[in-house]
Length: 104
Image (cartoon, rainbow, N blue to C red; front, side, top):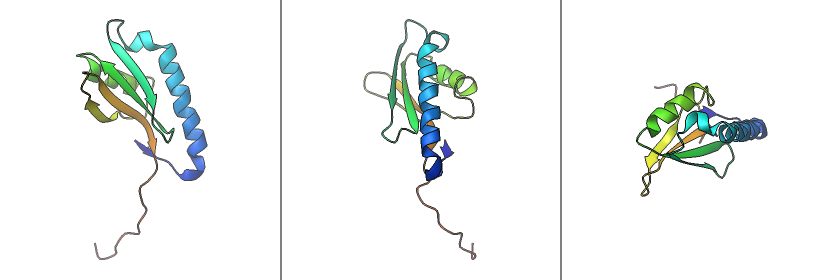
């Protein structure tokens, strides 16, 4: 996950939206027809969450990391109660910026 300065957020939201649209257009390259796939944007618009119901979900996420979402790493992985494995791709804002303590 890449850190985003607030001034560039709109550009990064557009990048994530474009990647999501491309994913939907190329879905058959990444997900087998027998697998269930869902896509949802996180509220900040800087990340997209992809859910795949498949025994090969982790393999699918690795494939996405090296092709469509090159430069992004699948993070916040979890499997929900319906057996769908979810991963987020995108950017984040830094939580805080603190100066380093010179004593460390």
